Image (cartoon, rainbow over all chains, first blue to last red):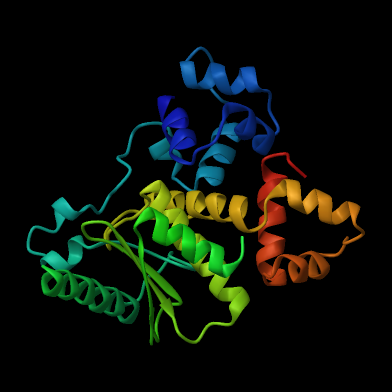
Length: 115
Length: 133
């Protein structure tokens, strides 16, 4: 279950912090990450819920990004803009993303003017 | 940290911060040869602090994504950005000191730290989730 470690480290958490959040001991987290023990079905579901990933992903039977840029070969370069927003990102609307694109264009134009 | 201190931090780290007439977002960070932050011109001071700190968290962690990133990738970036922001805007040590000074309600703490009640509540929930409260 190295995905537990990957997810924990991606969130910048220590084993102790994850253990407290899940109400288990730190050695238990260590055992899960090292593959010495497997979390119970209930613990697996709690882990998936905590990390906001699917159980399938946690168990390693599904990749993390079902939709990745590589699956959108015909997309424009705008779709590759790396960005982040303040607030709920569960459903980024077209209008929100249009504003992101406008800002990215603004940044690029400003950089080209400054050259 | 005050709004001005956050702006100073951004300048020190080389992050551009722009106040723009955003209508669809409160704040945006774009990675393009460095990090660039757009803040809505229409935010109140408390919300501006929360948004700027959050975006600086993205800059510091390198936590950006693209439109097609899976939700868990976005959520992780947001978690880390919030984590950084809380540590700067509402550090747990200073919250403890404020409580010792008699500020015990969420709104008292929020007022003291110059953030919204909702933000303070979220920060306290975060600290609770990692066993610090």
